[in-house]
Amino acid sequence: MSQQAELFARPGPSSRRAGEVRPVSDSPLRLAPPLPPGIRLGTSSWFFPGWRGLVYDRLYAETSLSRHGLAAYGEIPMLRTVSLDRTFYAPISAADYQRYARQVPDDFSFVVKAPALVCDAQTRDEQGRGRVANPHFLDPGLAAREFIVPCLDGLGRKAGPLVFQISPLPRDLIEDAASLVERLAAFFATLPDRLGSNHPLYALELRNGELLTPRLMKMLASAGVRYCIGLHARMPEVERQEAALQVLDGLSPGPLVVRWNLHRGFRYEAAKQRYEPFDRLVDEDPETRLVVARMAARAIAKGQPVWITANNKAEGSAPLSLLKLAEEIAKLSP
Image (cartoon, rainbow, N blue to C red; front, side, top):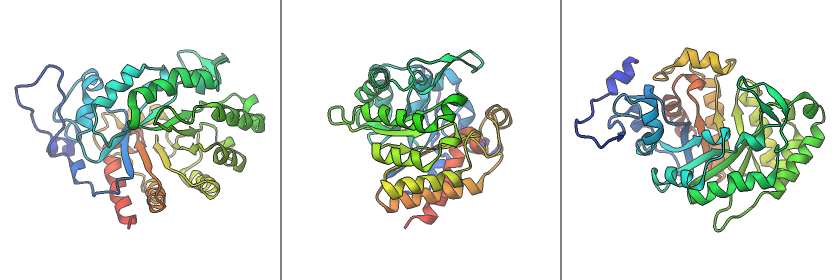
């Protein structure tokens, strides 16, 4: 554990309910500057034992944090969103979503990833290699039935952006990008725009930079879908994605959705090995942080809500990345 995490760690009281996870009372995250209420910062998942002294009051097993840690996470004022990434790997039930919603404050809002079942053009083996074409790729009926309806039924007003992260595409689809954009347009046009009193916010995240074109931005503007800034090794740097987003905002302004997934120039596994146990900043990325803060300040100045989630693989420790980001946003916000 880092010296910083040791400094803020405190042993918990001996009397605890079975499975109980508690937040740390003197976390450095509690020193984050106040931000406008429309800005929500959070992490990709919450069950990391290395966050002892940052989020949790002592060392817990990952399984315990997965089951019981969200309520403690939600007690840290700076953390007002989290990315539900498990939903990418398989759909979950409305009851599961409701269980998550009950654990967090009323002003908390989830970023939820749509299942690969509808976002991946290929079925994949255990090593992630594409095998055959996925017949359910961009199936709006399946997306509504297996994802959107249970998500909104379970989370209600705590549902934030519903992110359709399109997995790396086979070459034939990329080479016919115009047809793919039309297919995406038809997909989003068929998704429900309202369920009861809930109006879902759809966002598109890419893993193929070739698709980041004015044609795509025009389609998203017409469909009322946000482009999710996805910072990942497969995508262009944040500056180019910011420029693409400005094209979209020039056509149809809207909320800002950012998923700060990975450090510039790193691959996922290399970053994971370098940064574990995710208790300190290892490779700070002030350039990316400044651009993300600038986008957040610009969006909030225009009255648009902001969701930004950070991954441990961005700089080494997602909570500490967000603390630095909050400080940067505060400098830029009126």
